[in-house]
Length: 139
Picture 1 (cartoon, rainbow, N blue to C red):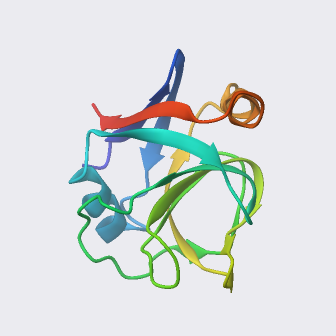
Picture 2 (picture 1 turned 30 degrees about the horizontal axis):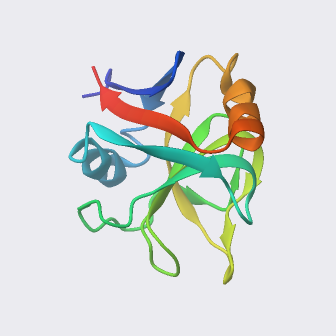
């Protein structure tokens, strides 16, 4: 399991994110059970420079807070278990302070994108073109 990577694809953009098994094992396990996961990425509403996918109808094991933080940097992927707001995955393309209309929330940092070259392009596309297709999988 230690060498598994989350693969994220949006159109021709491909990202490889190292799963943080040591820091967030329950989150990694819960996310892997949902894969492959498809949906649409949208711009974060309150959190800053990130794109997110709502997981409202996706069946996900209950996950406690682990490796949780409010502040994420570019490429640090987080899962929010939905305690105060909806379940979601956020991919920061710059700095993020995770929040909802209820205020700041801690969320689980469970994976980190290794090559950040195209992460800003993903953010630009969401802002300028709107919703972007995404597929999360593991290989």
